[in-house]
Length: 144
Image: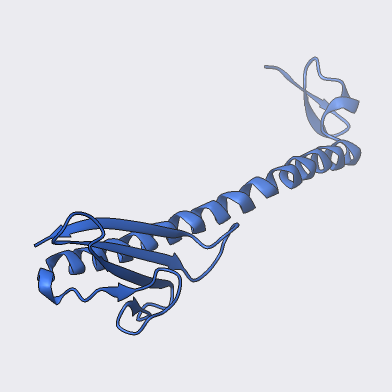
């Protein structure tokens, strides 16, 4: 590429002296278009963040419900006293040790064939990222 000296500046041959760079108006127009695109994309980032929070809550809720269910499944059959409620806290049938998740369970005697007990565990997230707080219900049938 050949270079010419024009007004004490080097200019590539074939380039008009008036077309060497971008004007301030062109730069401002480009910045304006970029800002519009970024503003349009912002709600997607907000929604993605909320969905991640919901996923994290549901993972924690599922883990707490599974842990309680496993504890109840390993308890000897005759030590499982019927009682409890999935909707409200009943003494000895709820766990509030984790401030992020409330766990309740109920044991129903004769919920199936004779000599069986139905165990239900419900875990509810304390916070609500989108919509209702995340919750999960697990059920199992224990036989003598």
